[in-house]
Image 1 (tube, helix red, strand yellow):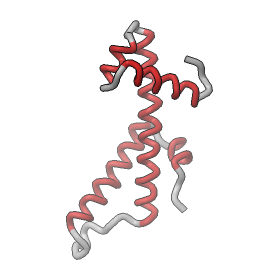
Image 2 (image 1 turned 120 degrees about the horizontal axis):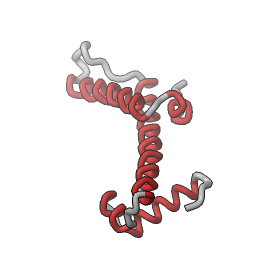
Image 3 (image 1 turned 90 degrees about the vertical axis):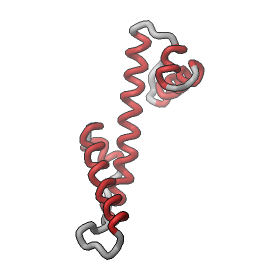
Length: 110
């Protein structure tokens, strides 16, 4: 049985999860390009494909934690929500709402 994102999240840092995900993604892409007749690039096993999927969730989660930390750092440095929104490619309202929602989901206050 493949590991869940929760299990993999405890085992990996963002860097190691990204590295493993990239290894599996590259093997999957090479196998798809080589076709079924090439024994040198076998497709991912079911377990590996599920691991890659779970790792994508781990990367998203860990990147999200980092993003929220950077938002707090920017706010602590005096950046306005307008500037933070711009840095995130969104509006100030969207940046504030996203940050506030994340804090609520974590059981923290804004």
